[in-house]
Length: 124
Image (cartoon, rainbow, N blue to C red; front, side):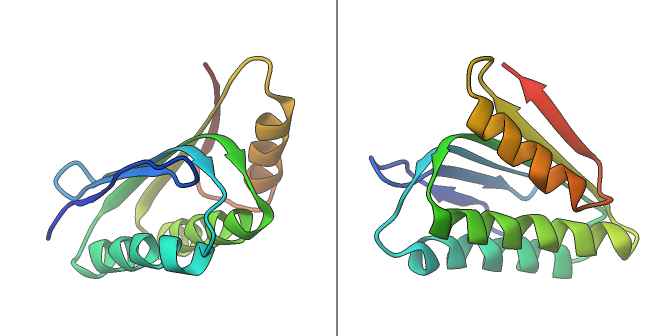
């Protein structure tokens, strides 16, 4: 399986999907003009990774700003990990936030409340 690399722009996240390590990291700010166009390859990569017999996946969110349309797709990513976890896979979500960023911390808390997959809130 191929790795996934999407370079950061001023309005989109940097994304690194490492199939060998079983990990995907999304970092930066997300307010793309077309959220569906940006997030679809990420969702497809995660689905393909899981379908190829993956036993575990770690998702690291290191976001500092997310608009409402991006939140919907982040929710979709978390939902995929939740389904993987419920099906017996080892999924982990790490949600990083800056000490003084209550909005991102609160967003992580809200996502964590809705899932059973291990969800770690990590202050940087």
